[in-house]
Length: 478
Image 1 (cartoon, rainbow, N blue to C red):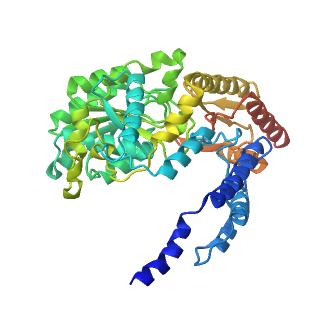
Image 2 (tube, helix red, strand yellow; image 1 turned 120 degrees about the horizontal axis):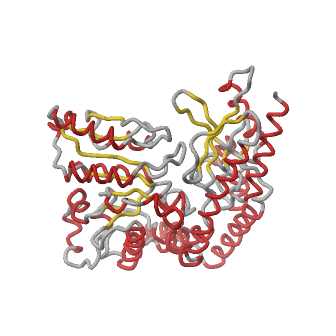
Image 3 (cartoon, rainbow, N blue to C red; image 1 turned 90 degrees about the vertical axis):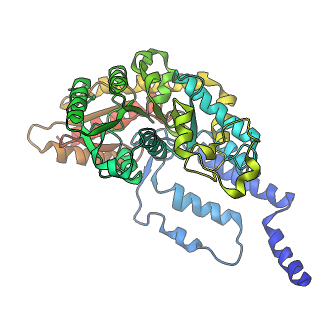
């Protein structure tokens, strides 16, 4: 048996490369990263390809090892070279953009040490760091000291955690689900519908509250609907408001909704996945009035803190509520009991094992400080307003509601052609050009083109380029 162990040890030690091998790989990966970033100014925001990266299949998993360089070359061609380039300043199609470079370093550090950031006993420093980040976010939102939260993989899991917490706090049982009522609008993010299904509440009553002319939830209709539902013997328990919808960046009237939730004893959740970190921009302070009254808030640092995908956050105003929903003990975790100075993430989330996400958040915030984040967000506001103004100066274009954040919708209305068909063609032309990437949406049966200015590398030159491409296409097709 000893000889067999020794034989296996020789092979298993290959998983622990020596310094010279690590140095070689570090150099090759660093060259790849620098080349990618250095070429962003000339790279397209969207690359269409008939092959769509299918040659990555040539590098399926096998017994034998290969060199790193060809793997990086295939990555460049088959992954980086096709589809949307979210790191490009021309990416204005969807809300998350490219990750900050120090975040990649933070992920590298977290992966090398592989700290188990789920339990304080296992990695007290890592848990303290993540809780410190959550406390900062709570302070930013005006939450009290007893508020707590969790770094999640994104807004979808954060929204799910909020709904499950509300379900537990309201002590809803399976027999109640058909009478439970959830209030939202048709502009709510679709992750809310997923959360309803996953949390076991697909039989709950959904009330889509009417919108005003600016696509905001109507507080008067909300309260009337709650009162009517109570008279019917139903159980109103959850209100979902948006602070920055995905479609248009619209902000629901937070303060009046908070007052209604408090009056009728409903859980009030604010989905601020996109808009939350605009709280750093003081000129938007009025938009956030009342958010401190919410029972829970979803934030997405991988949106408006420009961090890599997989970085979300849920904030819960009352720590006891989150513990009530998620705290659970296991026999094999008995060594943990009585040794925690901090709340462990595993005790307040659906995750037990989790990546040390905090390092990717903390490192760039410390290396840059808040000032450039604040400036970048304010810049995106002004860029969006500039585009909104300039597109209206081109004959034939109409726009949606005035942007509250950094999303705007627009469309061309030709005199003698189908408007939806024309705008589909316009969007396709922009995407085929590839220097700018935009997306579309459908509101009340009308096709709109969206411009979402969220990537930190997007600057005035990109907006001017977009306007130039639009003018050129309209001129050649009218």
